Image (cartoon, rainbow, N blue to C red; front, side):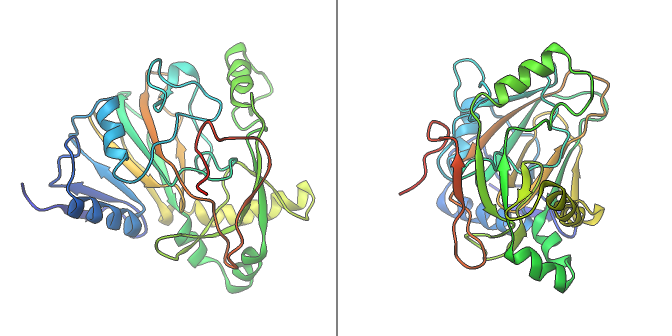
Length: 298
């Protein structure tokens, strides 16, 4: 087999990987190389993969334990660890977020595999929150270092319009079937690299100690650094692709620009640890038990 090749896609985030068959069991050296590439580039793109739901899960297990599909949203029938990201089910995640940050130990990494791709549009944006943190002016960085934010799934991120149809209402009812509230550091220290990143996104709704209005102003200010175009990988999907991104130090956004045409990805996530801030303090849960989704390591 040819050596693994890692080709950068943008300056701050993303690399295309070739020279490895991820549909087969991987040796320890290959796994180490892929883990290091993910640490460096934050998001990896694999073309021309030959994966199904089972082999996607097998690949994910090279990075750690697999979570169930979602704390509240149903999985693919008979496949409890795979979440369908399907336009027909109203699941266009067209808001900036880090996956499942409303639980105590969100996934460390997310994989998305292309199943059905529209003829145009449907890109996934992935942003480096590490680059965003590095770009903060020193006074703003010092402020962010001290802040903690409450993340929750119980808000209308998916129902922004005034008119809510039955499908949207059903989706929201499912998404909030269990209410979660968890407090995370606004600046998270990556457990492997020691990098600092802005750990916010759409589920971060309030800064601890501030009013909702004050919180929104500060969160919007910090979020603007995350979503700078220079910090974003804009991934245009093609058939038989897999993308993996580090959920501890990125955010992502699914662009709803394909006129409601069929679009389907399958998502499998890697169980993560409890986030830690710059002073070594861990996140803490206020409400909601997610042990059926991902157990917290003792």
